[in-house]
Length: 130
Image (cartoon, rainbow, N blue to C red; front, side, top):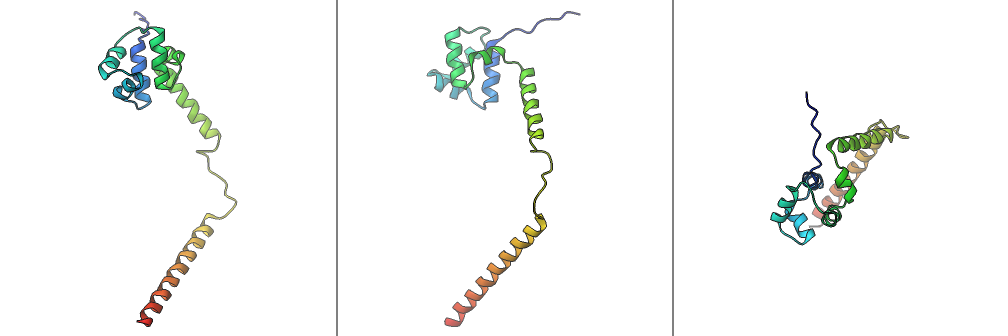
């Protein structure tokens, strides 16, 4: 059984980050002052010089190091951490209300009913004037 190491294909990493940022090749090309074909070639390149990498990183809104160190596993860990923190902060936990929600619904209904009664009275008044 061989354990082949994954290549450090910078172009694929750029492509994946661009996709995660919901950015099309055309948008990245425009940000870099080039065309879509150049971005396609860039994303198929295994290596990219540091100056070009920093330009791409700036256009993507990330650091050059983030591109170099990007892995799908890191993204999964990031999103899991985000989810774990949101649960800990009460986003997915039941919230203890200091009021009865049913009372609020009844209150809103009564206000809506009162508004409708006022509309009816106003319309009846208009009809009597004619």
